[in-house]
Amino acid sequence: MNQALISTLSGAVVGALFSFLSLPVPAPPNLAGVMGVVGIYLGFIIMNSLV
Image 1 (cartoon, rainbow, N blue to C red):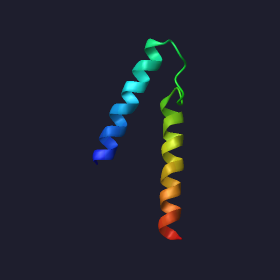
Image 2: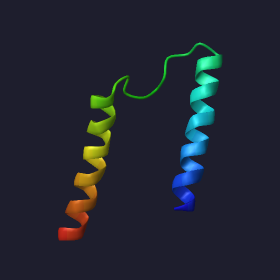
Image 3: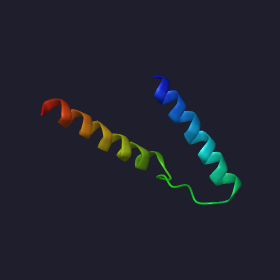
Image 4: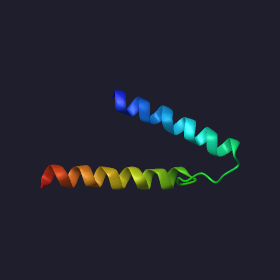
């Protein structure tokens, strides 16, 4: 849980930095894209638990 919190905080700092520097965000620009990344991660976890 501690890693997830640190990861979220560091992501927020990087996002703020990208916004401050007027750079495009290196992440999917909408919820569907983010959920696609989550789906890839979940698929990876499920396959590792089955194999």
